[in-house]
Image (cartoon, rainbow, N blue to C red):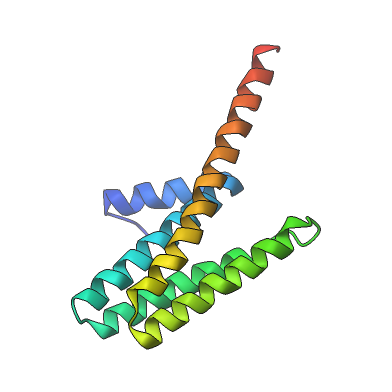
Amino acid sequence: MAINNPYAMYQNNSVNTSTPGELTLMLYNGCLKFIHQAKKALEQGNIEEKNIATQKAQAIVNELMVTLDRSVPISENMTVLYEFVNHRLIEGNIKNDNKMYDEAAEIITEFRDTWKQVIQINRSKQYANMDGI
């Protein structure tokens, strides 16, 4: 299948050439994007778009939960937080409550920002080790 749209080509290439850590960061960013879309749709009274965006955010949260490394002790705590985020998304969708979307976005933002720092630290270490080669 040929992709003629340059932006779509860029997105496809960035996903195919990204590290697992960068892909996780993309998931966090995508989740936040869909939460913001759901909030905007709710404010505009577009219930169908709110529901679609919420379901996309939930799908990303579910993917993040499924891909957790269960051998790492912190994954249990992360699972609880992901379940809370998912519950907030469901409640925000059912009750048309932007505060619940805000709570979900706050937790995902913290995860994203922490993950971004981890990637930056790992890159710094990787390049520091390359200096010694």
